[in-house]
Length: 272
Image 1: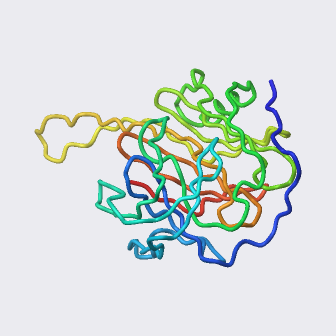
Image 2: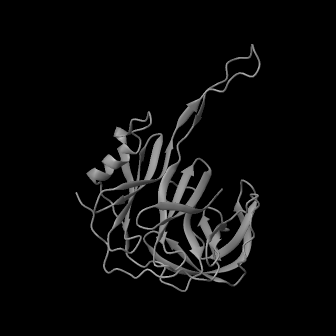
Image 3: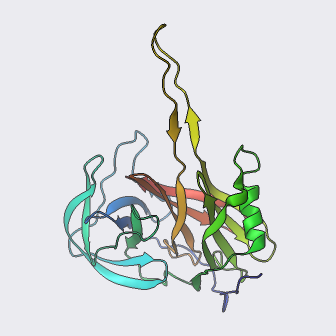
């Protein structure tokens, strides 16, 4: 089985914008969570070196574009602020229209919003509803160095696009099952696989602090679930960044990674 190539023409790769560009995550809360920014020459996290939260510069009335899979960019406007993370009270801007709650896994983030004056989707992006035998094999192989039996795993999401503008298609494969999940980048032409993220459920038994105490109960840590949230050019250089969503229980995180045709490099992350 093969995946249809979504590439039409090769878009030239250029210099990124020199304008500072801020990114916000939308999902379950009414307000949007600050993710970080492109400073004009580098990526900047939502926290400084001392892990202090940075303050975004966005103001009421600013125009942004809302992005998510399978939806064309939607113009939005900042207006007001509210609680963006109930866990720690972080606030963020209200953006109209607001993001919808994620369909799968059902909590966390669904959209990313930011201002831009460039084509933010420089090449076609497609969500494919099929199972590819070689991708299933790659998903199983991603757990070969663990004790997980990944034979029951399935492809849970498949997104195809030419990320780096070289004319070849890459596939973003979310693969997993009960207690394990991974997100892979697979070159649709060569079959080469790069692991973006992986999570496995684990069980530990804490040691007893005082002799004579009852044995401590085993604690199970569930696996995160991974999905691609968006494939979009965040800084105007003609390459598409991978915006990945990780979810477990009431916790959710988004990580932005670049891809230069060889390496996947995480550059921004934030969560609640």
